[in-house]
Structures are given as C-alpha cells and as structure tokens.
Image 1 (cartoon, helix red, strand yellow):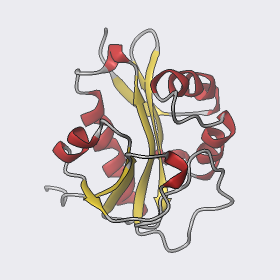
Image 2 (spheres, helix red, strand yellow; image 1 turned 90 degrees about the horizontal axis):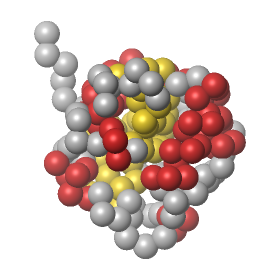
Image 3 (cartoon, one colour; image 1 turned 90 degrees about the vertical axis):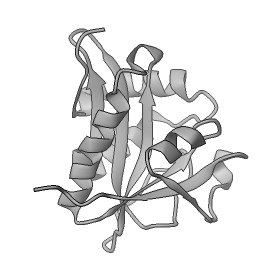
Image 4 (cartoon, one colour; image 1 turned 120 degrees about the vertical axis):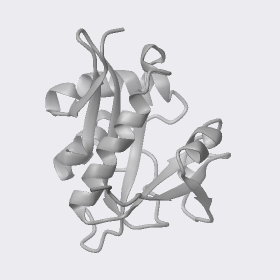
Length: 166
C-alpha cells in the first residue's frame, strides 16, 4: 500500500464511508444518512484515510457532552452549545490500512480538531475486542449509561488531550 494520508471527508466520500462501515462494523450498522448528518453538522471532524488509489478508512467526530454517548444509528438535530469533548463517533480501517500507523495519524488529526473546537477531552464507545487498543491510546473506561443500543460488551472511554508542545 502506498503512503497513507488523512484528509477532510466530503459528501462524495459517503459511498466509501458506508461501504467500509458495512465491512468493518457489520454488527453495528448505521445508515448513510447518519454519516451525512455528521458531515453536515461538523465537517471539520470528518476524515477519510486515502492512499494513491483508494479510500481505506474513515473517522467521524463531533463536539458533544462527556458521559452522554450518542445511540447507534441516530441522526442528531444539532450539536450541543455546551460541548465539553470531541466525540469519536466512529473510526474504521480496512485490513490493508491496519498496522501502518494510520490510526495514530487519525488521532493526531482529531486532537487538532478538538483543540480548535476548544475542548480538551476525546470520548468514544469502544466495541468488544478493541478495549486493549484504546487503553494503549490513553483512553480510560468510565462508568456510563446509555450504551444499550450498541449491545453487550461495549465501554465508554475518555482521554485527556495532551498539551501541545511549543
């Protein structure tokens, strides 16, 4: 695979995002409308992972409230005025993009988005089997209600964004 880059997602990427979501997260289906909704509400937090020839992943994030995960496959009417975190709605990489540092680059990009949004915490719902990965990335499990739509075995996690070095 050629060099991997993360770039801003646009409406033209929705078919790729949906295709990758179906392949990577078949047990957690979300409609294309949900991805379009996040892109419309907060385009700066939406990225695709691209190589010279294809899209291999995506990351969707938006400002939100800590401890209040968004239910699966739910469109949002608006983003909260009092957001205190950047919620990583979804990240997915096809097998060809894994193990090449793409997720670390994605987290760097999303940290910058969070700083620009004026928040210092990243939050997410970790799917079963991903807990060790997210722990290595500094995301700590937190007690949280509202995870029922995801099914058993998920956890809510948060990470404080490290201060930028000058």
